[in-house]
Image (cartoon, rainbow, N blue to C red):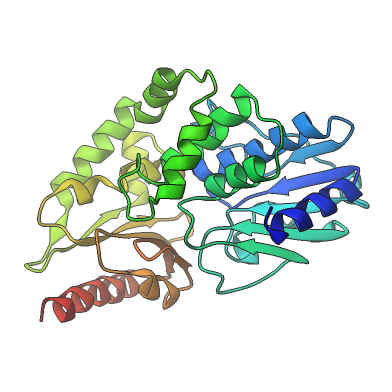
Length: 315
């Protein structure tokens, strides 16, 4: 067993209370790894109190929900943060109130934190990492835990299509598929979108701007969201839509926030764009990152950086 797994197990055994966090605006991997780890620990250490906290994302409530966690729960507790590269993106800033902190993540480790840090940027997902930990530490696994972790792996690999998918990814997925999960139902849940989201996707295709080198962008304003009866978080469902167009190589989805700033979701098929995100108070994976923009002027600057990157690559 790897040394890091021994460290994690030793630390987990020392605590009666464990609280698990993940990042804001959670996706399948964030929820899958967070609640998957909770289930795993409860299954193997039933005497412990293990809680999950953060915003209860309604679009992912079919996968799992959060617990009520009081301030008192943090006293003498071990805090574990899953799938979160930096402190600013941790959902529920009470993570600082525990006795010790563990970071488990697969994003580039640009801002280290935690008394113990297990970061593996080569892993497809944090759910893949939790699965490895479970298997190599010989921990018990059940169908509900396998469902959560499998959903996280599938979500962060784009159904095993993204370059982050490795032989280890398939090994972990194969291990989880030994359990009697209703995979058809899970796939339907992941595929299903509301009529409002479908209309927003149509809006994206109608309003997508693209240059000759394959740089693309679309702006979604608060007025647009209100017209479709959607929230900002709902726009995450259409981020991949521009990439289905053959000539699009890298793109940005600019979503206006209530305060007039913009959440920028950056994606690329082959060329790393996370440095652009870092230039604008963001970060993430080489081909899937997030940034922040204060104005339409900064939006134009970000799009220009995408264009310049592709233009330089074409030469």
